[in-house]
Length: 296
Image 1 (cartoon, rainbow, N blue to C red):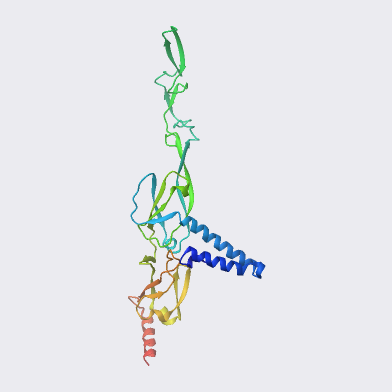
Image 2: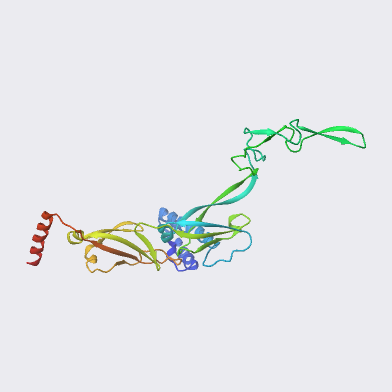
């Protein structure tokens, strides 16, 4: 059951309340169908809850504490929706490899210039008229200074953890849109802005709420076959070859991208009939005979 077909969340809830009673096993309904219906609604409800915290913006005003990144999506992901794993910066912690030193522990080193390699510094207490020795604050008593940066933290002494979450891709996205996710739903101290980039596809493109499929069809396939195989978002599909004889794009209604209200745009097959530039003599002779038969 696809609850996205409803125009509003309230309409979907109303349908759920009415149907779940009819499917309930206590009222003679099929148990498997009942459980499958419940699962579909739970997935839809979770998706709606997540979507309510995600907004699509055209010209956002970046303010406050935020993280900005680019999100590349395929044509299929934009058209059909779905989930996308997003990685964002998390909290900072002491580098486990160098333990906060910022230096490679087993790397190159040089003599400490402050304590001259002794690991201690001499101080004189005038009141007590006594000399005391303290651990060198620069080399921490080692007498040497590590000179190679830690590869893990790049010399910072700390590393940033990464947070991952699954983003429900909003329907109806266009290239250049911004997806905004509020910090409360991410559990971090910044808002997230993702600029949408649509990855070029070899034969699909999104145009004015529709999906355009560009293809080349040899003329003999149209003449010899009753059906032509084309590609759709759901896979390959056969279409009557008679539709490809008018010279106009073939339109399959409701087979394009999903809109936020659950409805769909059209799939426009923009085809080009392939005509070979040169035919072998034998093929040309056979084609002439075919033409003669057609004209009779």
